Amino acid sequence: MNDVIPYSEQFQKIVDIIDSARERAYRKVNEELILMYRDIGEYISKQSENAEYGDAFVQKLADFFSENYPDLKGFNRRGLYRMKQFYELYKDEEKVSPLVTQLSWTNHLKIMSACKTMDERIFYMNMCIKERLSKRELARQIDSGYYERYMLSQNSLSPAIEQSKKATGNVFLDSYVLDFLDVPETVSEHDLQKSIIKNLKDFILEIGKDFTFIGEEYRVQVGNHDYYIDLLFYHRGLSCLVAFELKIGEFKPEYVGKMNLYLEALDREVKKENENPSVGVILCASKDDEVVEFALSRSLSPTMVSEYNLKLIDKKLLQKKLKEYIELAETSTDASES
Image (cartoon, rainbow, N blue to C red; front, side, top):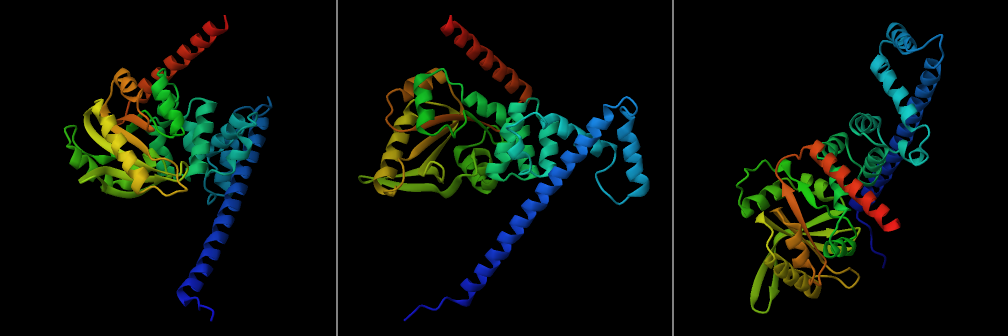
């Protein structure tokens, strides 16, 4: 006898069809809107190059829209200049062509106004597409210097830390900004953990949307002893469990031994056969990279040690540090080739 599918499940399938159609329609409308802005920008750019019109062309065009189409939003002088800038910024960038129509106009405006280099713009474009960032989420990532922090995390001068990064797919940063927690600088580990749970959506945005939360104070048993992992996640991209340990002070070498115990327990008792070995992240208020290097050099488990900041980091400092890393890398490359 065939099982009868409940009405609720049948109706939900119809809702799924409607949602899918709406999503396709939205993407198509957005694609046409972005192409329209680009084409308008191209026309304005070329007319502005004409000596007969010059820079006055944009103002005259804005006046035309104001007088004849007052209800048409976004076609004032500022909006028209943005369309012109949009075209001129990306017209010769082949890498950008397949990306531009996948972002909303508001996200494009934020990227154009806040990013200084083409590499940074492309980075945030890809991030918007992969993680489907809203305007607010994108603004938060840019304001927190996510690009600079990501690039700095890719430049490790330590073999042990470099090995850990490769083992964890380079998905973890050296530093995370947890300004959204709104906790005092002298917060306890318990309060830090509770505040993260309370602001879990923002925490996942910071660490990456591929993370799925499993539980807090997650119990694992070893022998006759119970141990509790502060936060346990599953990472879809890595296909593995990820254990987070929260420490309010500076990193200590003994934290690695404890994390190894947690990861071994997870792999033996919790991990499924089709999943990869579990990964650990020790999140500390500060760290000494040389101590981290020594502590990880004999560790067999994939573990990352990262810092957290409870306030936004000055982007100028991050940009300066990134510039220094790039210059150092270029100097090292030149020295090895000579």
